[in-house]
Image (cartoon, rainbow, N blue to C red):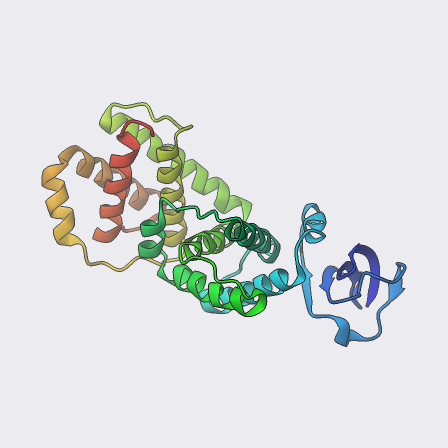
Length: 275
């Protein structure tokens, strides 16, 4: 293994035996003058392939124990979710965890407005987020608040989505744009795409499409709630049904009652006055 560029004393850019570039983590790896040949592989704690160069400098500011914790969390997620994740996840998640630890030490605790949505719609990712808190504590000795499990889950969800190919991404954006048009037409409104309510709405639609693409539907147990809300909000219900009919036509995807319910809730929110 050839070390070709120092990032800091514990991180460097290296080339493996096939000439592939990777990031290597280990105490003292970046200390010798580069380039040099690393013969003692036991010095290496972690390797990361396919990291975008723009993240290299981020490494220099990250404590090694947080980076190692993030690597364990990412590997756990890769196995549990059984899907390809964005290769930059260990670094971007480590950056978030480092900031969260700094916030905790300074007495700041940020609430996550969409905590219920994430916990309910992405139970696997949320469970991984809770497990991640234990992993981080084992490495750093710091107990982050349970609300951070939601933030970690969101990183995992984004890593799942961001690893999709460009064709899928373009398709998702086209579908989102068409759904926006349906909502505006059905409810006679103009969506404020700079508002936080719209951000929540658009992210929910993106996650919904991602799940439908991978045939990973949420549990279905909300038929009575849908019927109740349909009576109370008939226009919202009809709008949600128009959206699900469009999704059926666009991708052959069938939305269950649970997903119709969440569509109604998000459509209601996006129609409210921005906060």
